[in-house]
Image (cartoon, rainbow, N blue to C red; front, top):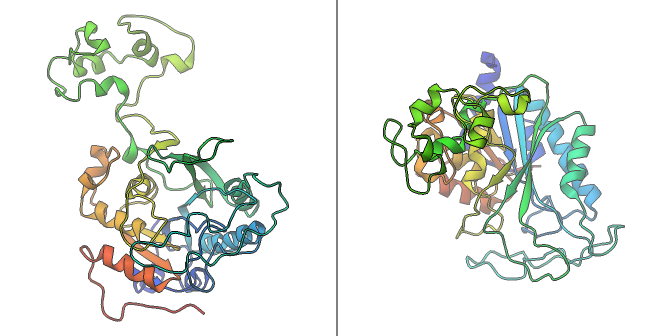
Length: 376
């Protein structure tokens, strides 16, 4: 869905800019239905004080926190195209704890303001109870008219250890995929991954003999190309049979897609260390699949709570075909595309705006007076 010229002209002044100010006030100045993809991670409720007024996460109740996010998403819905998507990365907290858990230790870069929070106010829930903020937010957004398409689980293999002895360690966060209309842009081919039966030949090449060592399929005596020509079904692959077999179960007779399989909604992605003064940085690997699948080439990506600028950095790595920077599989279909993505970043913290610009400087040179807008 292309924008008309008048909307495109109004949007031009915002493109490839980091804008400092309140996210709702800034978004009100962006033209309606001009954004292709929104991806962001709000500060988690009661976790840290980032030292600026009007920040999100310092509300007295979790209900007020969710209400504020719903209001912001309402403005996102206005500026999002009918074909657009919104991804929200969010985790949960427990009732009865200290609001600044993890924030007492001074940051090595000297960032202050993380140890000012009082104990968590009463939530109306029993102590030690998981509040369920991701679920409550998802249901509130559905009630507000959004369509929830996926609850992606971001599993962290290198998750933070926990000393707690009466429950399991938290190892994942939610990535919610919302859309505003039933018909929207989504290109699954950009994020397809190889089926397992193809991977066993990956080290030898498609035209060579099967990889024999530790390969249970080597007994078939087939190369990958020969295996593809047979058009084996999932049941054939599962039981190791080759021949004319008939099955009535539709789950067993469906052949693999020749471009690869759907990556599913459980993503095992490592967190990455970040030495600068920001505590909550999600990795570029978490952004790449949403961007490749849900934003068309020449599209516009918005992160309205951009923090250290990871979403925008991911766009630039894609634009410059820096595929080796990613630790997740990127298929050849995505690598062939000339993406030319544009982006907009918003954050209320001037320090983080400068941090984002620093990370993006190798790719983008911003003018001295670069839309540094102060929110009301």
